Length: 359
Ligand SMILES: NC(=O)C1=CN([C@@H]2O[C@H](COP(=O)(O)OP(=O)(O)OC[C@H]3O[C@@H](n4cnc5c(N)ncnc54)[C@H](OP(=O)(O)O)[C@@H]3O)[C@@H](O)[C@H]2O)C=CC1
Ligand SMILES: O=C1OC[C@@H](O)[C@H](O)[C@H]1O
Image (cartoon, rainbow, N blue to C red; front, side, top):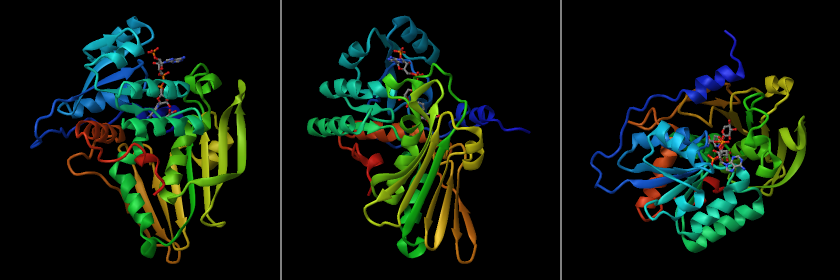
């Protein structure tokens, strides 16, 4: 059987496991969070609409706004959303709407997240949070100053498997001192040429769209921010040289000259490179004693494997990690629940910056 990237996509992304667990048992009744969606975006069903069905006591998808009201109405009908709004502004201003999900193109994240913050409304903001570092710093500084929760939707971070990997590599006695991280998220032909990801004006590009994931893994598991990019291998998108179709970056770190962080990302990865690096999202974390391969850190709910090898003995231990009763929950469901709990609890169980912290 041939497993083309598009077939793999259908297997792992389009067909999420059917929900089993439901929330709410033994929990004091609190009205569900009324969430509004800015834009009839393709990711919205996977990120919030389907997960909300798992937690009707916690989240209600209340309304969607689109630039064209007919599109909003069609989307609302398809997904059973009770309300629509004529514009993003109206949706944010509606007093019934308690929080917003922003799945707009990257280049619009900053502007619209700021508008939500101005109205004091918490935001689940698609990754990457902004178009550049300056905007990101400003955005979170303003959110913190105004005490409004803004969560960058790095959904992978909310799955229990991500925490298990963190625990394993943080155990210096057992695992040793981490020396190297290598992570990849590469595809070749998932996206059409008119996709927002190929538009420079909307902050597209491989590092922005795909690369932000392995970079976020690297920062989390190395526990440190890179200080510089040591080397860069780049393939431009043939139809617009301003867009990176593939990038491979090696980063350096302040704590040690020996520490290495390597990230591969591509939306138009040359096929020869794709076969070399592999098209299954993967990360490898190496210390002087052991190495750990975490296969599918992006969608661990579909499949994942955490393989730890003792370099001296060659002994390999394979593990996986799920939460009891929520074995079929997606990363997105865990993320949505954490977001709703943080908003509804009045007090954040985690801060806006947690998924981006280096620890
Ligand atoms: N967490 C995850 O797993 C994923 C995250 N994403 C992120 O979500 C965001 C959206 O991605 P995706 O759903 O694939 O994108 P889509 O193109 O499907 O959706 C983008 C939405 O943005 C709105 N929009 C507003 N202005 C523009 C404009 N100038 N050009 C194009 N669209 C515009 C459109 O809404 P309207 O209905 O108003 O026309 C459209 O529905 C991105 O930031 C991406 O990085 C994407 C996929 C997976
Ligand atoms: O967030 C995302 O997740 C997976 C990728 O396929 C996609 O391009 C990206 O936007």
